[in-house]
Image (cartoon, rainbow, N blue to C red):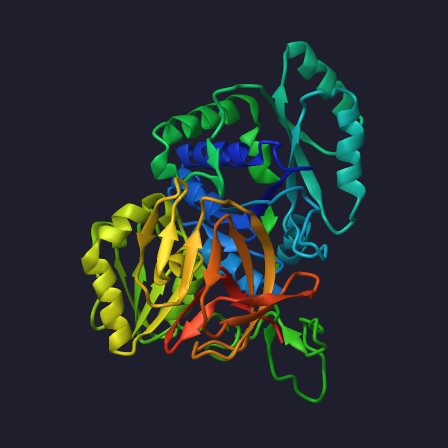
Length: 462
């Protein structure tokens, strides 16, 4: 089993994404096979990590996924790699509104050490107190090393090194401040790598900086093995097996494999043949969904709405993921083969499900940022617009009674700047936030066509 590390920071904006990209590319250049992952629900960071690593990246969400699910996904993803490298989210101990779901929670579940990326701007000796505090705040979280970022000068670096010599955490390196190591952003975060002409150049510069200033041998040496996932067993004579007791009080063993499918309980497929939209307008798809669906025996095909492709007419389900349809609304509105293909799928009673951007396209109209209104598929009775942006962000507990082939209770998240006006119809989800506070019902369902702004991450644990 591959060893792993978690790259975290005291706060957002410390440069952990750029450092992680540099580490991935630098390790890749040394011939080290790295399996990249992102903490939490972020699609875009996962995409850019995959680009830098030259390998698929996955999401590991400690708020939405059970500990067993996280361990199994991590172990499966890391199989065949030399190192699992997980980028954290926000600050190390920052989670949902309830406090759960932090990078520290994930590191604890996976049993992995943390490398802390600390932004040195506007501080010198105080960095020692900051690192000491993070390293000792939660005993079960092991901060195994520190990378200092954005040192202003050689003199600044000397002061930082002297201060950190008093802290019992290895210093892996000090990166100088470089204005060329910046990725552009927009309303949903970082842009996708294919949209950034200089993306590969930024990653190359980050890899060069990491290779020059970070002790990569020590970094790899600080990694440790993933925690084993507790698996069901049938103990004899009432004995407790070697694995001890699981979180639910049931006996567990780490040596007996589970019955087929039991430990891999994931998101069931939408149908036997699922046609999935995939291009720059519909880019937000979780790899663990595809793995779940294929393992369940479903077949998957892809089509590009931007290329005016229709879903496979043999598909009994169509999935429109989230993405950026608002950036391509005029083009989508003019692609009749795509829109007619959706309508034909609805006419033959295929299940059609859209999330966020996909939900927008299933509606009547989409008004773009310039205030221009474009006709969409017209399969759900709502209009969306993004010319009056209002950010909606947060984890969601979701319950549905629709013809979705999923358990009723789901975990997801919501992140969008557009808004929907519904003319009529039945909501798809009853919803609550991470604190359990009830929210307005979400989405719409009309026959076997349905969608909402929610991105479903996983099935809610019992």
